[in-house]
Length: 179
Image (tube, rainbow, N blue to C red):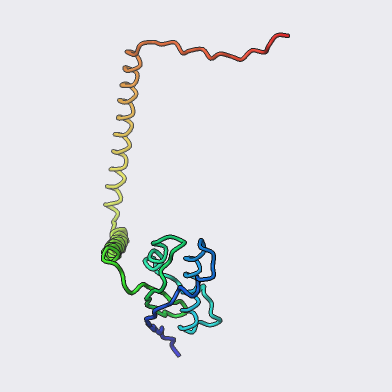
């Protein structure tokens, strides 16, 4: 039988205060992250409750760490999506500036993917004539680079000729004390 990927989506409000109540202050946010992973592993029925298969979204992580390690939010609303074995956890209520940043990032990634596809198509279409033309262009560029290096060498020689000759200051050597 052909295996089909089942995508299951669920929303949860996870209470975090009870989990980090008896933890040292500096560990509260990291404990709340562990609590989210354990909660999702339990409720999404992950085999052996393996928390390594639960992946947190960048924006969810930033929301948890927003106020620092000592003061995480007391509860958080998430959306868990099961894709095969992995479970991706996202933040449901994004702030306006976070929504804008997320949209901008997605737009940027789409542009990058399109450019990669176009580059692959262009490389396959090259013919022998284009290869010969490219070789000629490369040779011309090399010649122009050599000429520019020669000009730069001449200019530096002229500049050195007109500078005032200054003697370098001698370094004082440390001498051993006489007995």
